[in-house]
Amino acid sequence: MILSGTSRLAGVLGWPVAHSRSPRLHGFWLERHRIDGAYLPLPVRPERFAAAVRALRDLGFQGANVTLPHKEAAFAVCDTVDATAHRAGAVNTLVFRADGAITGSNTDGWGFLAGLRQAAPTIDIAATPVTVLGAGGSARAIAAALLDAGCPRLTFVNRTRERAEALRAALGGPVQAAGWDEAPALLPATRLLINTTSLGMKGTPSPDLPLERLPDDAVVADIVYVPRITGLLAAAAARGLSTVGGLPMLLHQARPGFRAWFGVDPEVDDELARFVAGDVPETAEAA
Image (tube, rainbow, N blue to C red; front, side):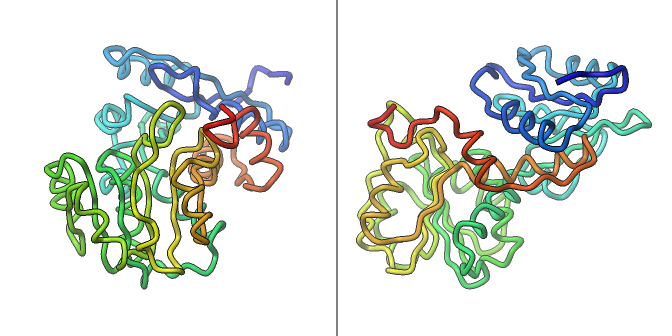
């Protein structure tokens, strides 16, 4: 990679940020399209976040992705945010406009839907009751996108039921809240089960659910992408169900930002997926 005096710059803001696969992902696209630019990991302490964002804008960056723990702070630093950020209550993509304004959006829900439709192309969201495990920021962003796509019923399941109730109130529409002990009873009427918790990551147990209660045509999705096949996905596949891992969401959610910063709408394909996955273990046992 050779940079010039007119290179276009972007990056990912997080604390920590060394684990992020976004530089690898965007770097692949920059190389593929021979773009004069770079995408950098940008570790920023929470108390310095707003100042860092404004400094990047003033240094001529095109924008940045935002990861934990900064997504809510990113909402506050923006001059304008779009409907996706309002619905998600957080920002993961910043664009610095030529007039100095900072705009924000949230591509997590869009990325999840794009990955879901790629992996399960026959799914009809408007006819699919959904159960979402977890009630954090990712759960909200994904739920908002599903509801906007016509999901007829969505239930948040969380160990702390109050957090699920808070999301139900924030999003409105055909949304219900349930405690973790209620999850088994929900499964027979669930056509799409989504794990948005950290359960299933290396060193953590998988959600313990009786997947035999799911309909035979149900789809099970997990936004965890390390390992690529979580315990939940392995159990669902053994049950004969369609599954969607977390990698497609990671890849697709990056497209709008890359398009805004570098002027190219990149493609998500098998070559990209293999490159970004790199040394990610296939299963937890292989980790």
